[in-house]
Length: 341
Image 1 (cartoon, rainbow, N blue to C red):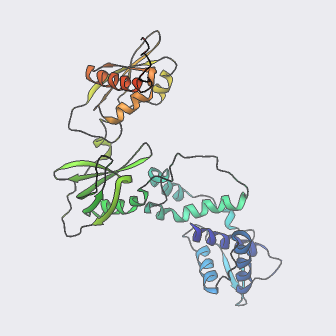
Image 2 (tube, one colour):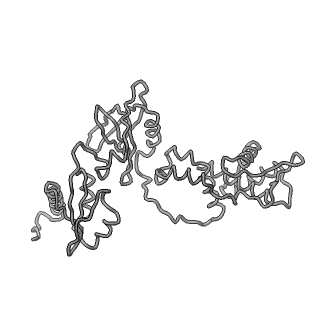
Image 3 (cartoon, rainbow, N blue to C red):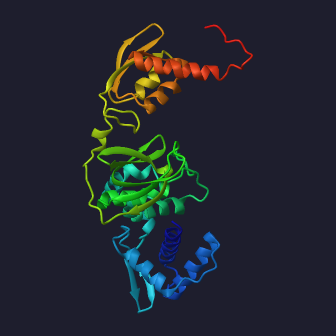
């Protein structure tokens, strides 16, 4: 983004110069102005080349960024806007810009390493330019949840490309449970984000498996191996689960009670798209969902602490009871008598 930012500073500077019709602007004048602006804004004591400014003018004239700036040369040396009052700062976001942004909305929440953003360079430049030119002491008013320290994000781009190009991969992987790394020959099918972590769903030895990107060590393409495309539809593949852990079991009807004060939160943010309200009780609301029981479901349940009770099925209810019992025991010292229920 640094090079883009420098270009934006130059575009803005050229625009400011050409809007000043009280003087004539040669190419050398524009070079000096852009060099001064870069030093003022970025502290970079560099002399912008003639070729760079010529390319900037060509870019501003083109439709690539949507400017279509009417820059003309007269007397074979002076630059000016042919249209009175024109400025690149007055260019609105077009319908095509909105379409491009909508196409990328699935990944806008996420990370700068994703090459799909390259298709939005022009849009992002114009948006950044508008903010940059109009607000000097601005602060972000939208804060997206992200973890810059999360490992493995740099693999998103090569994995995305491998899926798109249908390439078999050799992945060096070390799970949390493994004592050492292992090499896997996999056929990547889908990238999945859940709870601020990224996962790669692969076909491996006639089955599917999830690989957490933060546990991947290396990725290497194996072009000599034929790719097996399982044509996974993400909505269909994950429709019966919360999270990323999919099994071959049938979904089960999970019935649970939520205390009254938290019920509105569960209603407005359902555990799963199958969630239904069964009935209201004096002290809460009973819901059910149709999902495969998995690790992520248990994490959601345990996150509600004493405000949730699993009613059915009995097996899941027992599992949650056991986990809560073990958690409770961690807060009881060896010499401390267990409190009565």
